[in-house]
Length: 167
Image (cartoon, rainbow, N blue to C red; front, side):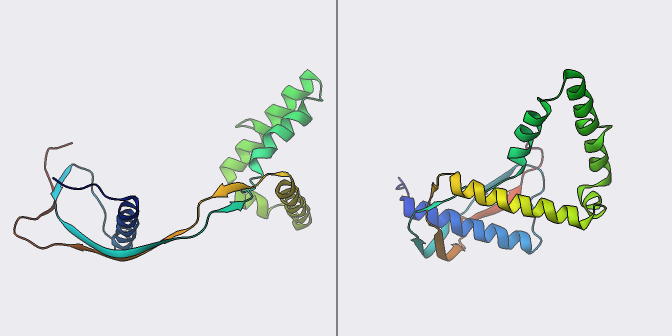
C-alpha cells in the first residue's frame, strides 16, 4: 500500500510537473482530443522554499468602477434622457457597438492625445486614491521549487498512449 504525500512533496511535485508541462508546450508538444491511459513511475528529487506571507493592496481595475459611476451619473437625468443616453452609449448599434466593431486600440488612436493624457492622469489619481482607502489583504509567500522529475524506465512502465474510441 502506498503512503500519502506530504504537503511539501505534493507541492513540489505539482510545481515541477507545471514546469515540465510548460517546457513541453514551448517545445511544440500538444495533447490531441481523446482519452488516454497511462501508467508510469516518476522519481522526484528537489527542494522547495516558501517566502513569508505579506500584506498587499488589491489590484486596481478601473473597469469595476466605470459602471457604477456612469449609472449614478445617468440616474440624475430624466427617464427619457436616461434611455436615450444608454441607447446611444451602450447599444450594439451605438458607441459601444462601434468600438467593438472597430477595435478598442484603433478607436483610442483616433482620439486627441491630450484627451487620452487627461484620462491617464485621472486614472492614475484614482488608482492612488484606491490604494490609500483600500485595506491590504493577505498574500501567501512565493513558493519556489528546484529539482528533477525523472520518468523511470522499466519494462513494466507503459507510456501515455491514445486509446482509439475512448471518450
